[in-house]
Image 1 (tube, helix red, strand yellow):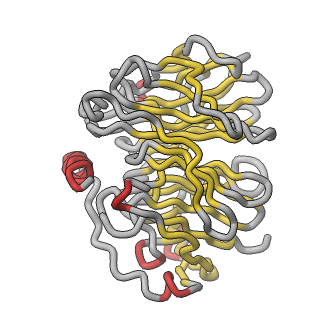
Image 2 (spheres, rainbow, N blue to C red):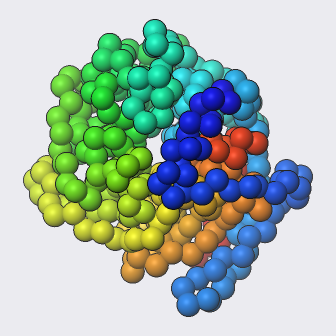
Length: 334
């Protein structure tokens, strides 16, 4: 595990994403923490209440990478280095639902990261989970379906030379959209499974040496994605199912990983910035403001989801090596 984390830390440093030393959690571990929300031009807003709800087991590879929420508040997460899918109940109990088999080479052929990992996850209304597995092995890399009480089943093979990462579902078109952070693409897979097709390979999705296209979300008229290397948030219009021209919505988002929308419309995005250990809000003009940081317990935040006024923030501690966790934050009333 230490070797995996050192490999990732070196890679992050190579692309300018600094390894941040995180102070003791202190009050964040005990209960409510307060973070000042700093807006454009130095303006400020009310503090954002947050707390660490669950601490995960770093020694066993429980580095949470992505999240999908159920109506009852259960968080379904992928534990990257453990190659697992798990359910975290509102009370904080963690139950492992599936563990993917390790590649024969131990995962060293997995591009860039050099260890096999579970990544994006989506939950359907009937409880079926879909998730991505990147192993560097053509026989196992792909999109998987996990029905309650069943074993994972691969429904689409994906390139072993890539790193499938973000996953989203378009209920209208009945297909998945997924990013590949190494190949710099967005691909689609039908709900029933089958052949993956590259939907976009626009240069805005490309890596510049580490990981490119990362998080992904489906909106009524567009596909949104983040690019970790380029520090950008992207909008790709849907033109009768085909991609329109990519628009860069926001820049300067160093180490951006997953993101989500809050409120109605596309006016407010909340994004996890992995290396800087921060959670930021991004407005319709592309301006960002810090919502949470290392002092609130964030340790390489990887993904964020919203349920009502509650934000769920996963931290993987990839490079901090201290405390992978799930933080809960409360959005202000509007």
